[in-house]
Amino acid sequence: MKTYYYILALLCITTASAKVDLVTLPAKDMTQLTIYNSSDLTLVRDARSLTLKEGENKLQFSWANTLIDPTSLSMLPREHAAEIDIADLTFPPRVQNLGLWNINSEFGGKVPVEITYLTSGLSWRAFYMGTLTEDEKTMRLQGYVRVSNNSGEDYENAQTRLIVGQVHLLDEIAQLARMQPPYGQPGQPVPMRRPETQSTSARGGRGGLARQMTVMADMAPKEIKKEGLSEYFLYTIEGTETIPNTWSKRLPSFDTDDIPVVNLYKFDEHRYGSQVIRFLSFTNDEDHELGETPIPGGGMKVYRTVDDDQHLSYEGESSFKYIPVGEEVELNLGAVSDVIVEPKMMNKRSDNYRFDNDGNINGWDETFRWQFTIKNTRNLPVKIEITRHFSTTAWDLENMDDAQKYYKKVDVDTYRYTLTLEPESERTLINEETVHQGVRAEDWVRAHRND
Image (cartoon, rainbow, N blue to C red; front, top):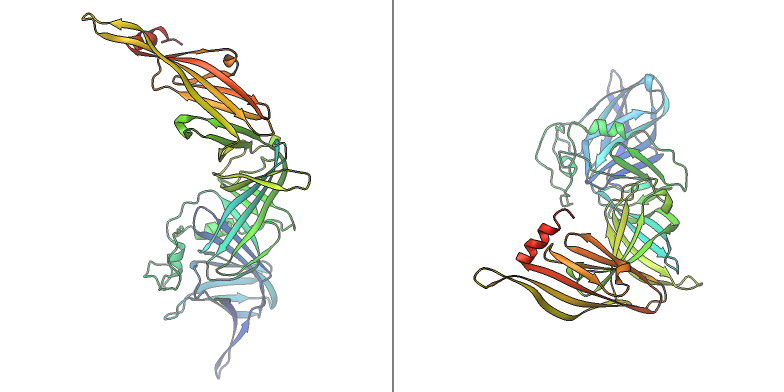
């Protein structure tokens, strides 16, 4: 149900009496919603065709039971602008949620106008579905946006545009919507049925924001338009949608095939305990069939095509933050059971003792012999990282057999093995970790100071 309306009042004054004719405005020609995700803020553009008479005209606007900010209301004629003077917008005394535009027109007939305002209660969030190919080398990525409307107003056949980026605001839009007249000054909020939402707006800067957003993007059907606006990015969702009050609606954002991806399995007891964690990564760039604009943050469910009939298996889910152009995203899909890493301490010894002048031990080495058994029970090859951390920077490592081929020192207290296992295969890596204690550690630090 509509909760606000427009009325055109044609004021005819004679010597005998004053008569006001009320004429309901025709249906909206176009509605456009520009919804910010960083604040509870939406710019609404409403296009209609008014029938004006030459002389004085009055347009009445009511916003009862909505979260519209009355101080942000503005109207512009789209044609005959030189012949039409929108003199002012007044708020009649002792009347809540109502404004009256005074219009002087030298033109009589239909005139397209655009009414803009800021409102609260509309929000959006992005979410994604990734479908891996059977060999898991590429992925189809489908983006969606869920728009929720709790503004108090139904929006029919609305073009939806989404802003990614932070906006710096001062006053709450919902609070301004509840304000008593005069609306240009602070006042006590008018009680409404909706609970307050956490949002803000910039008093004094609304007109500039409204003017900034009044240039409409081309409305080519079935096309997603993405534009850079200073530090913001704007996404125009294809087509138009009707979003009734209190409803949420899922809208398609983009659909891209054949995105190259990397599957990586990580074992790091310090971070993940005894589990192997699967990660999926891709880059927002042209080489990965993306890169035109940043990708809004959101949740993502990942599936895999398992046969020629396109049956899917669920692989996991994760979330990511805003991905700038050229940046890589790594999704944590959670623990797996089909890739296993089993570390086992085979031996421990202490030696290379040092003594102080009183005969007490003040330095020694501790050596641990480790065996890492790595199993891939999948029917695909897997890439695995095994990361180990020390509690000291004074350590040495000796790799046995072919373990050296996969070894890399990451930083002063971390090393890593990176290897690929063939399907349904197993491999064992063996090494000896030596940790220097006491004065033996001091000697090691001096000897490696320039390393």
